[in-house]
Amino acid sequence: MTIRQALLFALICGTGGAFMPPAHAAAFTCPDTSTVTTTGKTQAIDGLYAGATDADAGKRLGELMTDLRKSGLKPSMIVDHLVGAYCPLVAADTSLSDAQKTNRVRRFAQQVTGLAYMPSETDEVDVLVQTTLAPELLTQIDQAAKRGGVSRDEWITQAIKRQLTAP
Image (cartoon, rainbow, N blue to C red; front, side):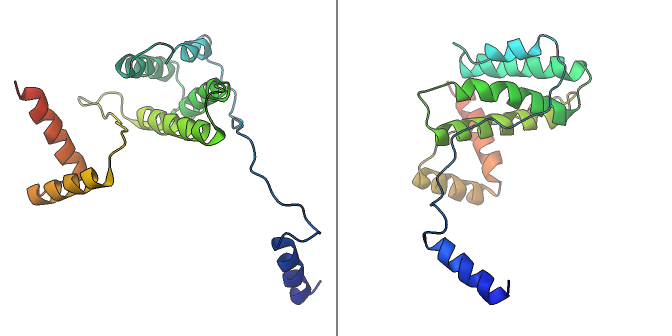
């Protein structure tokens, strides 16, 4: 097949011609993750978020992460295990759309990746806070950070500390 014929074929197929049916979005499915032997740890994630506040869920996740580290798992295997155990829980939630399920699993994967690769002996703990901000508010934060000569993250940290120390 010459290049010209290949381009003509691609053009016909790309325009929704009779040669190929239109593509449809795939339904949400969980990724295949490597199976890791972690006795009792799979059950622990089932109740991780059930009826828990964000603070309690974060504490539970930290404890689970500590247990998995102590069992000798490498960070990549910890992430695989936790995402592999969490994804079916999200997939079973019929109140979520496929896009919402995908976003929820991605956010969880980001969170556990950060925790898994964080040194366990640090004095400070990085906490990932995800919140929706209106573009106008984000612009105000960026302007205030620039005026203060600090990064956005540093400015937000300082603002939280100021608020916590205020009566």
